[in-house]
Every structure is written in C-alpha cells, then in structure tokens.
Amino acid sequence: MSDIQCPVPFTIEHLQTIDNVSGTVEFTHRDWGSQALEAVRSYIRNHYRTEQRGLCAYCKVAVSLQSASNCHVEHIAPKSKYQIFMFEPKNLCVVCADCNEIKREQEVANEEPDPVHNGKTRKLYPRSSRSFRIVHPHFDVWEKHIQKFGPVFADKTDKGHFTIGACKLNRYLRKFGWESDYDDEEISADARAYLENPNPAGRAQNLRTLKRKLVLMG
Image 1: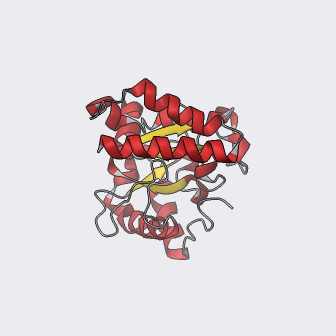
Image 2: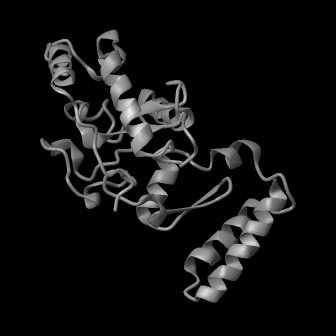
C-alpha cells in the first residue's frame, strides 16, 4: 500500500474556482500563490497533512499541524515543468519547509531534476510508480526505497537515491558534519552493511552497531 491512500477530493466549488483562475490565457504556474486560490490551497494542505499523518512526504519529519509555514503543498511533478498537472490530485502532497525551499531554489536556478520518466510528451498524468524517478507518495512506500538512521538517509533503490539527491535529505550532515568521533564514510559503510546483509541475525547486529554510533553522535 502506498503512503497516500486517498487523493484530495475536490468539491464542485473548488473545481469552479480552479477553472475560473486557471482558464485565462495569462495564467502560469507562478499564479499558484494567488489570493483567489487561497481556499483551495488550504483545503489541499489540510487533506494531505491528515492523510500523511503529519509527516513530510520526502524526509518524513513532522510538518506543522496548524501553521502553513512548515506545511507546504508540493507538486511532485514540478508545476514549473508540468503546468498541465498543477491541480492533479495525485500530483499533490505536503512537505516540510526545508524540502519545499530546496526544490524551489533548484526550480528558480533551472536545476531541478525531472522526477518523471519521458515526462515532457505526456498529456495524461502517469498512473504507476515506474513512471517516476522520485519516491512518489501516491504510488510508493517510502521505507522500501529509503532507510533513515537518525539524521542519515541511505538509499535502498535507485528511486531512493534520486529522492535523497533531489531533496538533499542529508542536508544536516552537509551543513554541520558529524558531531562525534565517527566520520561520514564510516557511518555510510555501516548503513550499507545493514542494507546489504542477507542474514537476518547479521542485519540485526549491523543495526545495533549503527544505532549505537548515532546515539553517541547526539
């Protein structure tokens, strides 16, 4: 089962508002933040913060349950690249302020990686996980692609690797480094040993070792 089970169900009133705002020639993805769409954005945000149990779709840290400042509506296929999917329910989720800002900075710099395979020719929104490079909360189970060890994110699949890079999930390590005697390579090696060990008992030992080091880091 995917992380998100129920896409946002727009009401007739919401759909009318969307049609009125987006139906003009001048409308672009930059109009997403317009006052006319405020009620629609709030509705989407409230739906997905509940559906995602208060967790960011990409890094799984808590988002705000009240304020919008740390609970941003995310377009999984970026609205700058895919305006046609701007209001597609399965293209929407919520993310934390950091993941939102990181993706937005890449968008502004025209460096945002495209999460959709062969996406530029698509007229209909993709309907399966294999169409996406990124871990997609409507189609994927996050834990099958990414393993989180405290502040460390380790990829288990190519999708996990893409998501970690696109959202810079290891941003705390990039900014602050390790606050311990253990270096980046050592912790990464322990994470890989855990993920690649086929023996359940060996994996359990690898996990205990990794957890002990991460606790000492704090």
